[in-house]
Image (cartoon, rainbow, N blue to C red; front, top):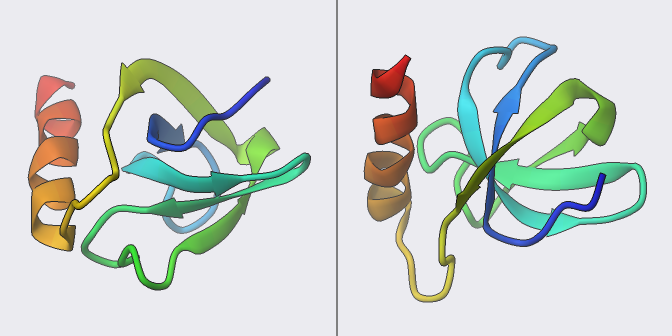
Amino acid sequence: MKLLKGSVVKAEAGRDGGKYFAVVDAGEKYCFIADGKSRKLASPKRKNIKHIRVTDSMIDLNDITDKKLRNMLKQFSDAE
């Protein structure tokens, strides 16, 4: 599974399970995710890629604020 910066993912495990996040950075086994509320863009959470599910959506993270990120990710939670 190849994660790209800006991919929208859903956390499947952990205390943040069921929430949507944007991938800030990705590696082989781990990625860094942020949602703009509990995890800001300045201090993203490290998450094992086995514990997330990738959606088909992308968010452009260039010049984005935490508030804009929250509003964009809110659309995904409201859709469920």
